[in-house]
Length: 312
Image (tube, rainbow, N blue to C red):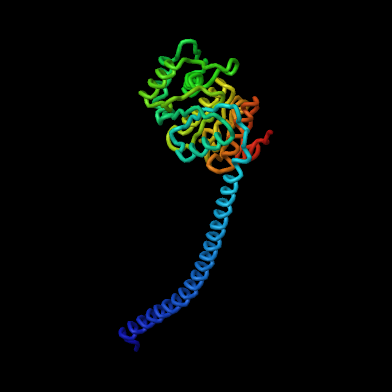
């Protein structure tokens, strides 16, 4: 007769055998799995190393190309802006280094850089748009007429344009020195814009901005800058809106300008002013504006080409 003890021992032996089998099987699978993962990890590491090497090589090529552009740039723009005057207008996100590099190349091209207007953060702040409209209306000098558009960028351009640019027909200042000083004092009090000491009206303008605009109200900020630059263009002989990498995206001022046919038909744009080639494009685009032409240059898909045609 089979005893209860025999049954218990038999059942225990069965479970022990199962447990041993599972452990042995798991160990075998784990070894194969770990070996496979190790191979995949090494393969991925090899790919990462190859990509890092490629990135380093590409960076070196870009740096070499920029050094080349910076070296030949002064020769490419020589005398392109002789007997022309240009005012610089910079947005709050424009770096001093980029501003100075563009200003230096403009001077190398023979331009008389008459001064700078720096737009404050409040200028493109959607929450300050109504205040900007009010300030522009209050500071308007006698004889200057604002455009009929109600957006803050166009209205601000309707004020700052005549303050900073010569009348394109007569070549004479559109406001007096005291009126100009009073208007910029009011703009500075509101945090909207400041003018460099001794600013003189110029024939042409270069509006510099940063790259892609992110965060809440990015679209409104980009549109304000694009429409402002367009009105600046209308106030003088012409204007160029230049931004850095990303500025031609949908939330960049250059991108907004290029997407609007009414703006793109008159305002010139450059989307890579942070490079030597981009700064050359800015100078040549200013020359193009002086010749009553416009174009869009840089590296984005919306650009017509890297630079305008060089003119003698």
